[in-house]
Length: 273
Ligand code: KIV
Image (cartoon, rainbow, N blue to C red; front, side, top):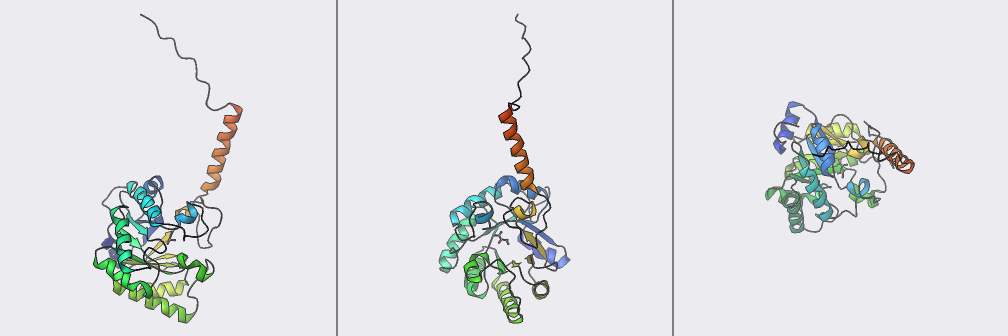
């Protein structure tokens, strides 16, 4: 991908111009290079890596060191997209000073350009402090996978008017605290449209309908790599799980049948002087 790297103000300018923002997740350098080459605006090193890369049932076991390790890899593979790193569970909820130190490590050691935090009004003090010290923050409302035990399942959120009003208040408060964009996960499309209209910062939807300022999906879902569970709102643009298993099966059969490696043709005799 050529052209200068995407910066945070570019995202707000896209909202003003009515241009949609395209985001995907990435967890390693090779995938980051491929997605970056496709022209995505921003890559999220999501703590979803706990599930799609590490095989956990939830995002909760992901640690800060793991996030830094994967963020560094993604940054090495990226030339154009803005790289945003998720702050994992318990790295920003305990105290503001811990949150600053942990977010700082994602920028300083991981090389991220921004961090993402789940939650609204309960984490406003953290968001404002991070922004005050120069750490750009993306918010995340609606379904918050780090609270999955409380929520009870990966289902649509804020379906009742009172919950929708609360989510809108959270979004406005995050914007006032300095968040540069807000992910809206699995909320009704009409609510996402209203929130998007009320905010000056971009909204990035996932399972939140077509009217957000941008969209994000887990790249393993989009590419058909993670076939244990496919959320209903996902569009699979490829089915790589089958392609990979098919290729690996062919390789196994070739090795077992002695077809790989191929027998080399006898080398031509080198004339001696
Ligand atoms: O962790 C993640 O991948 C995310 C996106 C699904 C928004 O938070």
